[in-house]
Length: 115
Image (cartoon, rainbow, N blue to C red; front, side, top):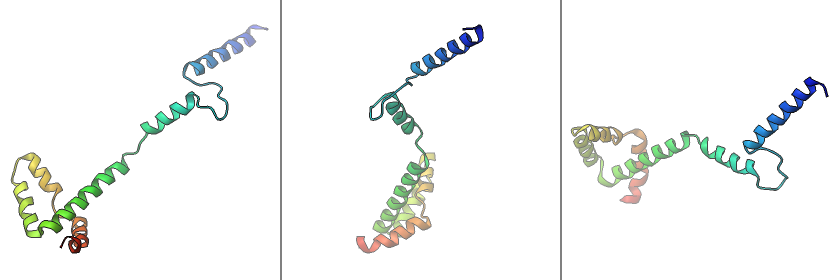
């Protein structure tokens, strides 16, 4: 072999060794090789944040709707006003718990169930 072929050959061997060190290589079909476990780990790491954020938002709106339907609008507004006059955390809670159209709609839907 001449020198350029030897360089190509050793370069290919280095690339194969690098792939094997990272866990790659030949895997027979139907076996649970390294790629099975790394793919699962990568899938878990790339979770979108939109779905959990929307779930939390939906839970908050439904909670506010049930609370509004159970204690009534006047008492609910009095409690939110009391929160709005407190410290910074209570003011933030008052802002989050303020009546919005979605929570009012949920309250209208569940008020016949609550009584």
